Amino acid sequence: MKKEKLQLEKKRVLLGMSGGVDSSVAAYLLREQGYEVVGATMKLWTPKSINGNLAITDARKMADKLGIEHHVLDFEEKFKNTVVKHFIDGYYEGITPNPCVFCNKHIKFDIMFDKAEELNCEYIATGHYSRIKYNEETKMYELIKAVTDKKDQSYMMYNLNQEKLAKILFPVGEYDKSDIRKIAKEIGLEVYNKPDSQDICFIPDGNYEEFLNEYSNRDSEEGKLVDSEGSTLGDHSGVINYTIGQRKGLGITFGKPMYVIDINGDNNTVTLGSNEELFKTELTASDVNFLEFDFEELKDPLKVQAKIRYSSNPSEATISKIGENRVKVEFEDAQRAITKGQSVVFYDGNKLVGGGVIE
Image (cartoon, rainbow, N blue to C red; front, side):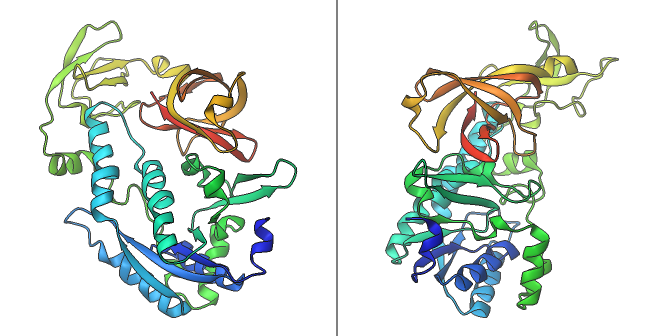
């Protein structure tokens, strides 16, 4: 059944509410469309310096204002033992994980469905800027970019499948952010001018090194800075303190610009090279998922537009199967600073095709 028809019947939907303007207006829009909205705020693990209850308080206020049911879902231990652990482990392995992608896969669009069932909700919804449309010809649900590329969050959604897409609603995806703030102001929601959340929710100040040093329970061991031939250039202060493409803060000068081109947690080395060495035309990715077909159905090379990080522009590429849930991605134009642990995500125009984790 097409999603457009669902609003004709009163369906119960579990909406993830963060206390921000997007999810609050999402609640209003869903209610206006005839859904019975149940708000749910996830209680997640946060460092001691962050008051994790603020989001719960704001979300409860918005739910009361809108006259909808509200629940607090305690995912603290699950979040700590999956998302946060994966983030910490990754940095010590020399990769740069994307915790938002990981959280969507294991928390927001996984155990949220279990909670929806417990609360007798047929659908779940969030305030993400994406769109889901049903294609009558293919009989498939398609995940489409938001109307504004500036806020589009489809990059984070590549682990979804047809079963989940049929039961997810993204009510704000048809709007520009300025429109959402305007609606919030018009209906009297005081969060209409609340700042957008930045960076990672459990590291809002963006100081990854400080976070890892405090919460990893590991020592950051010094190691060797090497060039692409393996020759030693100096010492580094620990692999967690470096990122691919980094130029400043290397702790040593060379008389010419040098950049981090590789990080290896196994042998505790950080490789430096020229800016030119940061550009590559191919990568491999694992944990690959496609939204409209199973991985085994990828027989021939597939032309797509691929993004190597959330903020990058799509680039023409060809993906080929090279193993179980693994692909090679070949770009027409060289990509700068391809980073292990980040996601490469595939599009066909505005439609999300799939994605995987860069090896």
